[in-house]
Image (cartoon, rainbow, N blue to C red; front, side, top):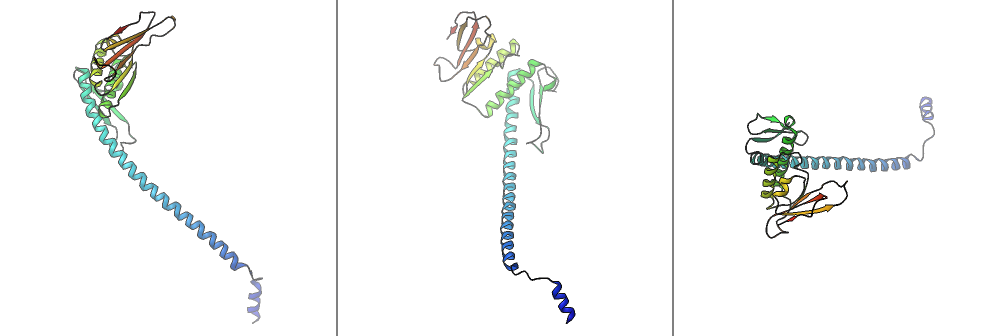
Length: 231
């Protein structure tokens, strides 16, 4: 009995508020546990949504990339007068994060990547790629700024000719300094700038709705030159 009393006394003074404290702590624990479960559930749902979106994005990218690749080959051949053009995913297993390689073979040349081409050829390939994208997703209006600046005269003619083909579905404003591009237009506008320091800033406007005689507006701001208008 003495031993039992000693053990009981060693327990110390009973905490009469333990029941209330337990209820308070248990309530807090239950609340935080519920919050944690909600967060984990939300995380799981978000991960599922992200996987679904990623899957859909991958499917759309692969499908649209294949279309652009197909049109790029066609546009490249038409604009270059032959040759081959191809878009290749560097890692087909990870299309959303991998790079894209542009492989081209101008007429009479070996197949090479775009980095091995001259500046003019790179510009023409980029133009062909842009036109291929427009074929996949036509836009009602498009502004091109000095897109033909690096092209030689022959390629400027090819560019202007192909622009006419696209003008059936898209209206274009083309800022250009190239005579060939302006000569290919249906309407040419020019404004005389009196200040000697003013930079020449021509522009070409292609429109299938704004004119009744043709599909192309063209114009140019010319330094110290006469006002030009051709219809």
